Length: 205
Image (cartoon, one colour):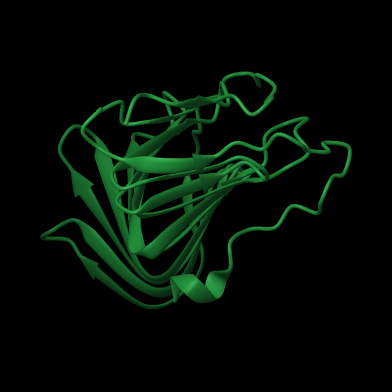
């Protein structure tokens, strides 16, 4: 399928600033600290990263890696809120370098993403077998059985869709050998502003 760009009349918001701060465990039970592996295992967690990120999951494993990188593995009804975006899935891996949030990758049947762009009347929704978000670039990459809608236009692809939070541009993988389908909305009313809704949590259990 030839590369398809959906600008969807989106405004161009300012670039997402770096997300830095302490990782705080607000709620948990059954903590296990292993100083040999430099890891902490927790259950039924509520974790925050400064005021930018909020995470809920049935299980969490925090591990210190080389290069001053901390890895947070999450599983069981994972729900992540960051700024105006939401991710929901069966499992997730978050990476931090120092106090800076680097990336998150979620997986599940199916993982879900939503985002409310500034000054745009509709909420962005995407689904895929795997979703990865890179904070530095603002790129959200949907991989495997992907679908995306901006509240009117719809795009489906068998392989990959990329949504840029900063620019509001959506594109497929650009490979002419892959196939997909899209619906271009011709008659839309952007004056009607629906109440933003996050994805259905029941599908991430």
